Amino acid sequence: MRKRSSVVLVFAASLLAIGSTFASEAAPQRPSELFTATNVWTVHLKLTAEQWEAMEPKGGGERFFNGGPGGRRGFGPTAMLAPQILREGDRNDDGKLSKAEFTAMAEKWFAAWDQDKSGKLTGENLRAGLAATFGLNDGLGAGGRPSRLQGPEGKRNGLASANGIEFEYVHADLEFAGRLFQNVAVRYKGNGTYMQSRNSLKRSLKVELNKYIAGQKLAGISKLNFHSNVTDPSWMNEVLSHRLFRDAGVPAPRTAYARVFLTVPGQYEKQFVGLYSLVEDVDSHFAQENFGGKKGSIFKPVTPNLFGDLGNDWKNYRQTYDPKTNLTPEQQQRVIEFCKFVTKADDAQFATRLGEYVDLEEFARFMVVTVWLSNLDSILGAGQNYYMYLHPKTRRFEFLPWDLDHSFGQFGMNGSQEQRENLSIHRPWRGENRFLERVFKVAAFKKLYLARFDEFSSTIFKPDRFHQQVNELAAVLRPAVSQESGEKLERFDRVVAGESVEAGSRGGFGGAFGGFGGGRELKPIKPFVRIRALSVRDQLAGKSDGETPQFGRGGGRGGFGGFGRGQFLANAFMSALDANHDGEITRKEFTQGFARWFEAWDTNKDGLLTEEELRAGVSRDF
Image (tube, rainbow, N blue to C red; front, side, top):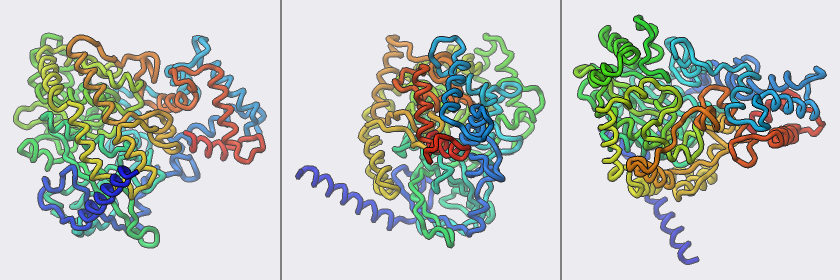
């Protein structure tokens, strides 16, 4: 009892010490002062009621996801599932589902989806069945371009944009560590994180200080990215991953943290929104800091067919490579030239000349860290969440990390936890990836790649190093986490201690689509790094081949699932109905799961489900 009391006193003292740090902070003068991982800045965002209303995404919000009046019937779970379930099961056309109709529909779906008549549904059976039943198209667009992840021409890419959600800048005032910036531009940001947090106040934000007032900057920085970390109960995945890339010699954004408050007259008065990570923008200032100039070009590709030949016209490449800087004709041509080279060069030519187009040493370091982190929400999976920099002097491409909230093997859309912990270092990508397949066959690259793996395994990949970093950040972040809620603090303390927790929460985007949210256990950083370090050492020593994400059983074809809407729903169904967690659903598990849903969704207990009850039930449980 005495020992516990002393711990409480120490913790209380740390709260007071850190709280006084919050109160006495001074605005940073240099980027190095702004971006220190242990800094927790105080930020106050102020908007008029009109600007707050205008900030709500076009085609988005609750109406978009629920398909309500004025909303666009699009990607959201209730928009897709509830009306279709009613149409599928309503045999007497009375606009309601009886328990018998609901059960008959479940039996019909199981029989149709069990194509090999094995009496069980795999992840692939679910994906194919759901795609057929709900008319989903998970295929790629022309030329191998991922229509499901690319926005309309000229718009931002990503899952949210591809499904009609557009973020618009509005006017606001921003107080940062006591310094007031007037008339800044602010909008929401993110894709999966936005869709998971759409019904809460805490959403990721992007602020441009000089969009409306030229030259307005903070510590020489004009753009601020506030990431909500709604998928990460530790608030550390992104920050520690970016640090790991930088420690490995890869140009990567610097980070800090911020407690964000909101004022909207008549609605919020300095309301605490939450603890955010503050992530450096990959822009011309970043290029100046990391590459010594601003004349290079920055791209943010979204394609699983990187450097595929799309013809001779730059307009065919523009949305796929999404340049963030103005390109010269020569820079455009360099991209096209490399795409044709990757597509058409024979193996000998490719091996000889690859180094003319790609900085092999830098790319080896980038790939080693990406693979060690088992980050499949990246170039290894759907082909997103990274930047490329085309150096103006060397004319070679370098690769930069971005959006690392699912690192440390926490992207549940792909395979089991064990598979991600033991991800192969020799073939770590999911599905077909011609660019990576060709690069990994080049002896010069593979030598660099394995050498860096060997070097880092005895230095920056040491598990105890990560444990120390987690503990250091935990002491700084805990007071701000406690301000969000007691429940979040309890989860935070558990993951810091190395205990698994349920990923996300029921309801919202995360609960619906198991890869982002509820229904599965999330293993935190400390236990992951110990297992991952051992797996990599065994693979380097030739004792293990690791897990190769091939297509087949599990989440998609081979345990590492796809990324389309059918796969999202397949993960949700598997999570909810696979009672014994063996990766397959029997007829009994399937029908019993539907019976549980009926009882839970029939809120007025009249033995019938209306469309309104279906929407509410799907929204709550998915």
